[in-house]
Length: 226
Image 1 (cartoon, helix red, strand yellow):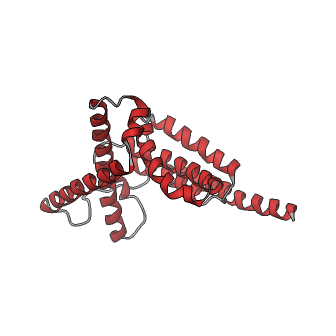
Image 2 (image 1 turned 180 degrees about the vertical axis):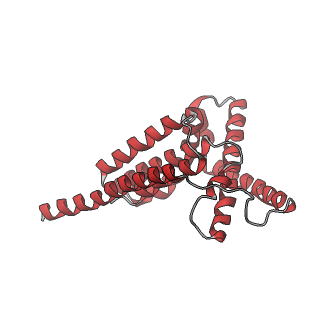
């Protein structure tokens, strides 16, 4: 795995996700550029491919129910953009040491209340990933081997069961945290060093250039057609 600090990995992942999410609709060339960046990010972090594909399959099935009613052309762009964002964030989450997401969140310049919400969201995501692994193992024990078997197993009902089970576990985890003295903050510090801040600023500059260019080129094409 690429040796980067947790705050730096989180900031770079967020830069890729935010830049991709703000792209102009139907800007396929720039979406392809972000796709290549997300793929390289996953390779650098050495994410487990089997876990990544299994998680992406479950998430894309859920997203397809929301996107397909918008029409095939619009849905295809939204699904590809969502796939790039999911690859980036899942690569970050799947390569985290156990129970370290909250430490990485400490470096974000956000209010304390929002940071507490993000911390609890991070704990929930870890629980969700663990529940996905358990459901995959249960599917394999029932003879559903391979990616096709897992996709048949992942129906709308099973996705609902996944979130219900993960919510129940999240409530138990939060109760255990409160019992151990949790008050919304972690007793650790996690800040970016000077070199890491420069890397984040450079990544932000690249993302801003790509995203703004997608709007400028779309406007130019519209003027040309008119």
